[in-house]
Length: 114
Image (cartoon, rainbow, N blue to C red):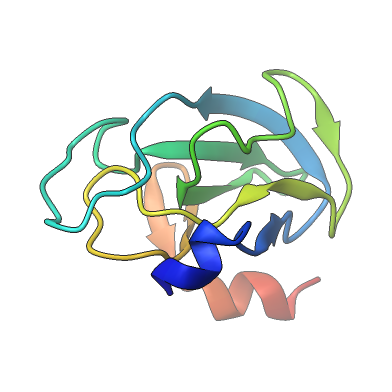
């Protein structure tokens, strides 16, 4: 919710060990219209590449909250940043996406393999 975000929000953590292959920060994190567009629609986001070739994307994060940098390695459960409402968003939430070779993969299948 907006009050929780304003109070410091919730941490977003890595779903699995991986390498940071993309970061975007600096987008306004108060989008409520769904049309703020910054960061290719994901706003402030982190993308990780995993040993099995899959990537995970963590989007709509709070501006300035990202705790990782490009090419760093992360462990499962490590803080990546905080929930926000940046990019094409209408309220604070995490957009979690999984892909393999550019095709989306059902996230629950990715998590079940961990």
